[in-house]
Image (tube, rainbow, N blue to C red):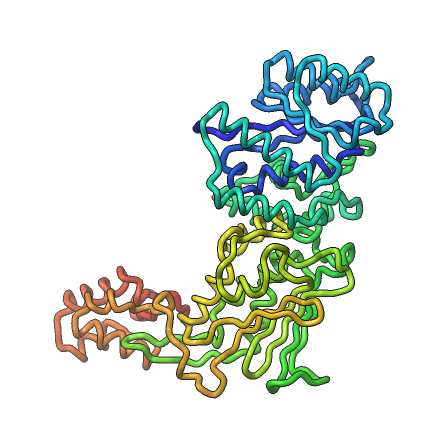
Length: 512
């Protein structure tokens, strides 16, 4: 199997809109299914059901599997049949695998057209599964698709993938798939969406048309179309990620940041920010808040002068992304809290880790990851280049230890999940210089001759160097100086600025 199976997801009208989005998100975020399947939802304008039907069938014709959810309502009619009913017959005639999921028990009252559709499905011999809630639906859909992939292509998930999926389904909140009707397409931050899709698809952000952006947002469950009006709105996940101020719709979507002068909170923090922005941007602003309220000592390491961070930025980012992605959004009264003290940074996120993860298992590093909000976790991973399904707390621990600091402390306080990152305190010398921050790494230094090493030391002290200084200092020919300076440019240690008599060389990446 070389290409992803296109899974057409169908249901009748607005009744099962939540379920459609949840199935889309399941297929798009499950570690096994997302590697082999691509969800397809056809969103149509209501003004012309006949044209909608043509477009719908054209898209169905390009799919390999038909998934239909049936509730009580029959849906929009095209002639005597609903669009869903016509889709079903088309899928049957094409010989597609048809997976049917029925909401509610046999005794549930349904419209007459729906009853006729169910009788036809049963007469055609297609098996179906019943579900009562979204957790049951996700379990049944995943099981059916896993069986289909095994039967047709001989591929199966690993035991780890199965366990992660089971835990994530149990933990999944219905929050992120809610089709809210507060923010229209034009209200969303298109540039943030452009960045996200470019990162997700590894493409140039300038390549996307508005139609590409809408398609990318729809595929990822961030927007939905109201079939009664044709308007496109943000889902709850889309609101969190793309609203210019998510707290206008979801008041819990804020980061409250305080920086205190000492090791204890007081009523007069030295800096404060109420961060309201699309959450990927809010995380960047929180990182910037920490940057301006913590120390950055300079250190000379060999031939390098390095500005250190008091805390490893990657660990801070992990903690903030985790707080945004995995918090309990149903708690609308509480926000994410960021506190900076003289000796530590504390990040508090509403809600405790989803079962079966416990604080004890997190502290031991012995757990399989699962997410309360898998769609948010996946989309944030695109922005911040972290693994949404990895062992984030283990990475955070390693990043702190590699920085010369203690491992993070994980705890709970008054219903908040709390991550505490202790800094160096008065022992600032304990901070380690990451090799990635060194302009002149040991490997590069080993390739430099003695003149080049002295040139770099001079640039560190004076800020720049000229070819004239080199000729005068080393008493060598111009060609020798030229080779030395070119070698330092080629390795990225120095860069040339200016021209003619104004030419000078500065540290790579520095503007003078």
